Length: 113
Length: 116
Image (cartoon, rainbow over all chains, first blue to last red):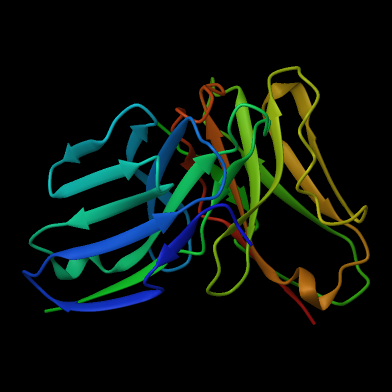
């Protein structure tokens, strides 16, 4: 299975609610990133958190990282219909994994207006 | 400025034929990545180029897959003797340089490949 595993696989919420997505990984990492994908096309980078950071904010996004549990969460506050997309976490392969970026299977978020 | 571009946008081919997919990275980006995404799945790493260094080919699924990067810029992913399981969206990304996972990758729109 892939390094990054997101859950839930799919999430449906009402506009204005918060959406929380989780990501778990298996090996040690240097950094973890979250990306967004609309309509199965190119991904857009959202936020990066380093292994020595525990929390990071960017606008309505809040990311946490727990390296002891090898997990991260992405919180989108006050969701909007335009937030409907798939969200992926991505990790490097650690100090011995070479140049790979490893993406999880993604969480499909649907925000109902 | 221009982002990452890929061509063609869509490709339909018959089983057994060869296909070439092209990626034009952002000018000045030395790192280039190819990924494959099957329907409803995450991204599967295929290959990574960094400047003039030997590429990381560890993600290529079989010897039918190969990629080149000419002049440190444009890259071509070639799939020989295509199989139906090769049907997927092939995404290319570039970044300024590899920074141990800190780099932001900029993605192209992808090429949707359908093998009949």
